[in-house]
Every structure is written in structure tokens, then in C-alpha cells.
Image 1: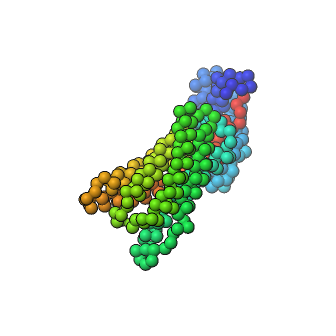
Image 2: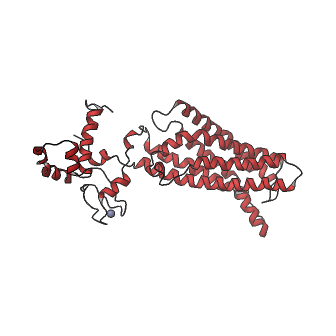
Image 3: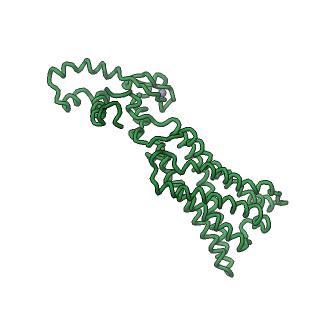
Length: 334
Ligand SMILES: [Zn+2]
């Protein structure tokens, strides 16, 4: 960023001087800079200067959330006594200035959440027939008919919001733009397939929980739906991860997850179960195994969508209130 006629190196050098001034003890610094005795005698003056280094950017204390702006970097939080430097070490993102610019910050952040929240609502509603099965085991099976249009509608909303993932920041790789565009287009097929399955095929032959009664038609449609979701996840993942990198917490592994890969894995398990039921006819034991794989895969997929929704919420916060860089905290160098 060669702004204001200064070269990047000049700015960096000025910045490094400023940084070492408050991070390093005076003696070390003087040795390193090869300071003459005359320069060393200036040390007390520089010391005052260092203590005067105040936080110019906003920075809430990590322990009590007290706003530390305006305090000295050498001081302590007035509310809880924690050293200001502890908060700086935890909150400052050294890569904050390396992120590509985001043209529509607020819209991107919000649609990113709508994208996964829509998927979560859709997946949750898709469980309605199974929930009805469980209730039905104890008495009369409730009519979930009105809920069955829900999954397709919610997934449609998720699909519209996913458009934001085609080019979330400036400078996305062309290949990733193409992958995301294909994934967004596949959403149209997915909405159609989910509508067809939930509204027409599933009610015509309701499968009872843990009993292998799925028709070949049901298995075909489910395989298609799971395959489409898998392709959509893989297509959107590179750009979604690009946004996830903005969250210091997710990037540094304080909360480590590969949620989208876990979701893809759960789908593969479920699809294996469908294929087993489709092709292994005659052995009841193996076909029960198929059903179990479908149930387990579906459960883990649901959990995956739920935790991805939490991640998206975190990322939204990171986009809207990014972790500051050290320079943003202490003001411009020079
Ligand atoms: Zn505090």
C-alpha cells in the first residue's frame, strides 16, 4: 500500500522503531541500535515518550470488556487490573491489514449468516417426518403436512444468500469464482429436488424410523439431494474459508474446526447407507446397516450445519468489528 508518497519500506521501518520502543526494554534496544553514550543519556526522555503511547483504536479488555481506548499500552485495565498488553497480545491481528478489501461489508456479513441459518432451518424441518415417526410409535402419528414445504423454502433462501459467496472480497481467484457460481446454480436443482421429495415422495411412502422400508424411488431422490449438497459444499468452501480466515479465533485454532469438511464426510456416510440399501437386496442385516449409516450420517450432518451456523455468526462479528492491527491501535507511524 504505497500511499502518501512514502515507500512501503520507509513506513515499515518507522513502524518497527515505534514497535520496539514499547515492546523492548531500553537497554536491549540501545544495544541493538548501537546507541552512543550520548544517545543513551536521552533514554529517560524516550521512556516518557513510551509511556505516553496510548491506544488510539478501540480495544475492549479481554477479561472485563472495559474499553481501553486512550490508556497507555504500559498500563493496566482500571476495572480488573489486567495488563493492557495482555489484551493487545490476544486481540491484535498481525494480518489485519493483509485482508483483501470487502466492497459490501455489512451485507456480506449478514448474508453469510443467512446462508447457513437457512440451511439449518431447512435441515431441522426435514426431520419433521422422523419426529412424527417417533411420536407415532407412542400413539397416533401427527400430521406434519404443512411443515413439509419448509425445507425447500428455507434452502431456497439459503441459496439466494449464497450468491454473496461468489465474490465476497476483491481479488478472489477466478477458479473459486467459477466453483462458487456452479454451487449457487446447483441450489436451484437442490430446491426442486427437496420440494419434490418432501412434498410428494416422502408422504406417499413414509418410512418408519429404523425399519428398512425406503422405496428405490426414495433412495434415488435422497442420493441426488445428498450428492447436490456435497457438490454445493465443496464449491462454496474455498470462498467461505477465505471469510473464515478473518476470524482470529478460527484462524489461530483457538476454536479449531473444519466444519464444512466434516459435513461433507457425514454426507458421504449417509450416501454409502443409501447405496447399500439400493444395491444390497436380500440380506436384512446389511440393509439395516444401510439404514443405520443413513441415520448416523444425517445426524452428524445436522450437527455440522448447527456448528457451521455458530461459526458463521463468529465470522460475521469478525467482519463487522475486525481485530485491529497494532498500527491501527497505536495510530499511524511517523
Ligand atoms: Zn479489564
